[in-house]
Length: 409
Image (cartoon, rainbow, N blue to C red; front, side, top):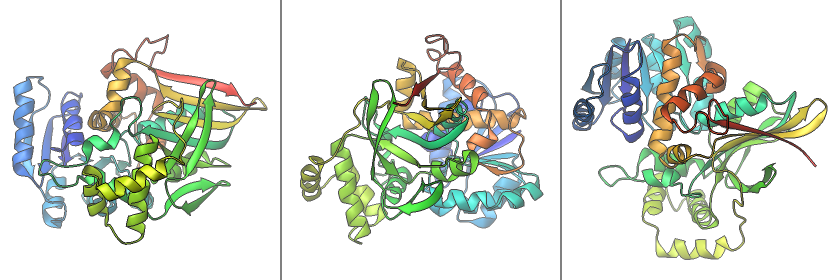
């Protein structure tokens, strides 16, 4: 199959292209980017690496140019869309993929376009298209960890997914704050969008809108407890549809108090109209003295992550009539830590592994679906363990996923 890697010269797209080139069934990859030189540079790097696999070539495409976008899609079987922020471009690319009958995968991490893209399910089915929305780190790995946790329960009450920002050595999104030109990256602009305004969480089993960066105190297993903070990633809106938690659910950041305090200062200034998402992202990359002082004062009142794992899903509910919490996390290995600490790898690798399931027919659902519905979670983590060798076999974990079920006190 011919793969169109849209935005493929970016950090996350480049990882996906590298892995996808070695997948069975891939006959060619076209790295399509508005920056042709960056796409050509990636093609040269892959050729110099000498890893073999499918041929890769470069193409200049601007997603806002409808004719060029449709032309690129027309000659492709599958598109990997890594063009962000998705609240600007996600719906445009998916609609074009449906119109050209091109299968679709992305790493969408904005909740608003996720809902809009899921609403295109009927159109995609009618076109014979399979679309997986949000198969990166968060959402993506987080959703599939949630699927593993939920599998341990008879009834789901509360369901949380969490990812790290600056704990346990993790750089999180802060390593992706600027692009090669020194401008705020799409990831940084997205981050500002999802820490401001209102975000969607689940309360009482219903989707509700609340301000972000609210604290959630968790005890996810024996000896693992602390406080994490809400952020506007898509997991609540898809897990609500997929697993129907009756209580609370949210996507959380596991973040130190200092970073959280600065994000909250930015949130307040964005909501007050003093900053845009772009100017806030610029300020985050180069913090101002005045905002740093405000953050220092605010940090003293906040609670920290304690002993929470850096990246996990936790589901609370009942099993055999008893209330328990099921924690799903990657095994504690150097390879897992390296993956979590490298957001490009942690996002691009899952995208390629999602493509692998689409290519071999494991993911065969027509329409638009989130990862926990479209993909086989057990197969996904087995594939992930093959790319991170120290995950497999760690403490007897065949796929590198540790499951802990703890009775609630």
